Amino acid sequence: MFSFAKGSFWYLTPFAFCKNQYFRHKNGGFPLPFDNLPQTDEERIYGPEEEYQQVWPPDGWKAKFGCFACGLVEVYEADDVDDSLVLKESEGVYHSDGVCMCVEVQCGDRHCRTPDKWYVDISGATENDLRQRLQQGYFFGKLPCGHEIRTTLDKSSFRIYRVMNRLWPKV
Image (cartoon, rainbow, N blue to C red; front, side, top):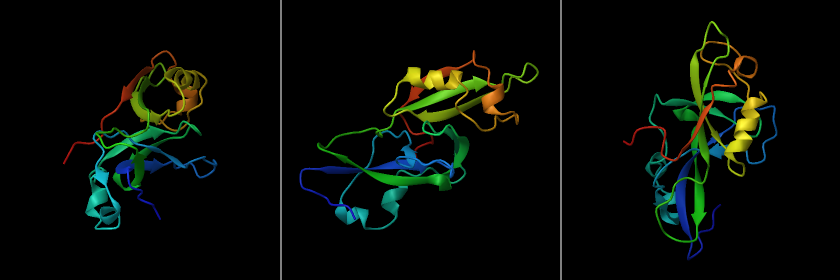
């Protein structure tokens, strides 16, 4: 149960839980990038489900995410996205609290070179920390071509940039 104290402001934000069930996660998941978080209050939070749907992606949406805590890279679909409440001390226009980076790479197999991209929330870390983990083969999963990320990623082909807006179209 949430306590809505006077002088505090609550916002809805999209959130996903890591799919790696074999790793003990500190907070279990990561915020998804989202611009202009919708404000909510106690009446609306316990009200109809439509309030939460403002931060959910549409049916058919999917994107690939890497977990900075455990390294698993997996495809997430609309049904994998949940919502979370974020407390702010002042009213305003906010982005989600995460630091979402997009990682664009290529398969390292010289006969393949299939491109791929995924998103990683690096809250509490730096872009350099992410780059080091990519160089060290920390992330694992499958590229679209079927090759393993950890063993066939072209470590010279990284392109990393920050993403602050939602990954699906506004409805």
